[in-house]
Figure 1 (cartoon, one colour):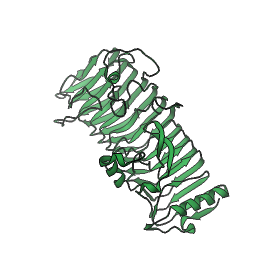
Figure 2 (tube, one colour):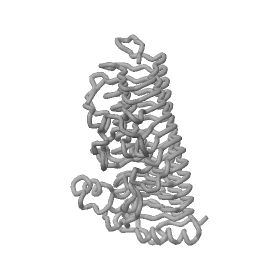
Figure 3 (cartoon, one colour):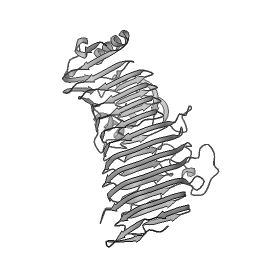
Figure 4 (spheres, helix red, strand yellow):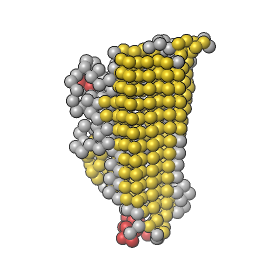
Length: 440
């Protein structure tokens, strides 16, 4: 396979010269050859958006930086999805559409130069003609690998494969400022057969979010067969999140051997009426959490985004079930330790016409932080800031607690409302050094 350097096409790694044309020429040349490797050597290569081709390996060598322009003119407009809705968006900094056999690798840096994008979004949003670019995006692609690289300063979501199959994200680091808006780490959407492993993710929104489009997506596709393992997730709104875009269904997801540190929520499910779709067959195991706001959150009244304030979303009465009714079932949590939890050990709030069902907690230890500052458990209108709470469950059925211990709660350790078949086996609340049986 041909190996070429970006400098062979006139690129200059001085951090100032614009190299968009050099990348375009290099990738067109490799495409004409039927594939090859493009090496980015030591230097800082300033560029606009880059469109990849099939059978391409992009190597960002150690000491090399891809630094992306913050000028909207350097980003063509493509039709993709933004927050689950099909629409025109600025092309991702690195983009592939309907291609296969692509690898992004090396020990170098990919810098999205997002500060101007964030400022415009916060203060001059009307000046953005289209949604901000992702750092890396793949739409309708096959056999994609992203490995070893350091990703930072993403204008919005950092890695977004959509409607793609056989995606591997391995041994990468992502660092976005804690206050950077919508800079999620890795968000597979309507993808199949995805492995995310050995990653370090420290971002300003959700670390990993599994998605499947909204109710406004005409052709709904599931996100399924996802493995997340050996990852360290820090800060952000949630460590591993499912939804709220779930209209195409999310299923067969395994999360294991991970560490969640200082995220607002550890495990987070979010949806609302109108979304439709089902989240099912999800397994969390061998997880350690530390200093999270809430350990387990399942929220059917999520209010962010368009229509989040509609009366139907907030109606607490049972409504007729139809295709727009979300559902969540067959969820298991096992072998999990959560330390220094501030607000809630767990907050499970379904809707009465579609209770959260078949949920199990097995071998769980939750230790609440003493004298913690109160915080809001999730984007939920009717909840107030709390601290030291145990498990709150409303509109659920077939919930099992087995070998669960909760420590340092300051109020009722298990509060159950409008729920059926909640079973507690060999589970305790620890008070004054003593274990007291936890009863449903």
